[in-house]
Image (cartoon, rainbow, N blue to C red; front, side):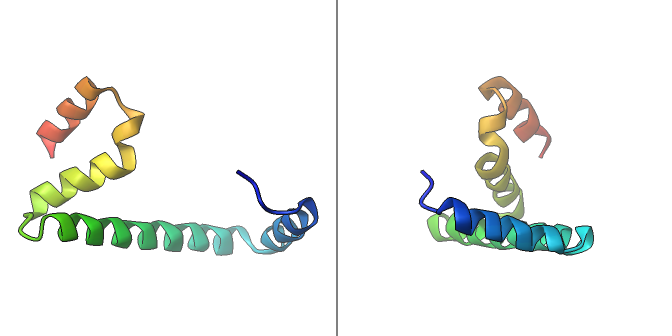
Length: 80
């Protein structure tokens, strides 16, 4: 779905390209950090007693679980 007009999208892209590479990279890190905090809060909301190992496993599954086959996920999870 795209509800942004081409003019607004073009303006936004122009603004982003005026930023330095470092500024854009920092924005990306900031967005990832916020997403991680939201996912972590969701995990803890569903399982308040989760230990750090379980939290790491759930973070992996939420962020990368769709990128691997079930077999690959199991192999990765066994190493966490």
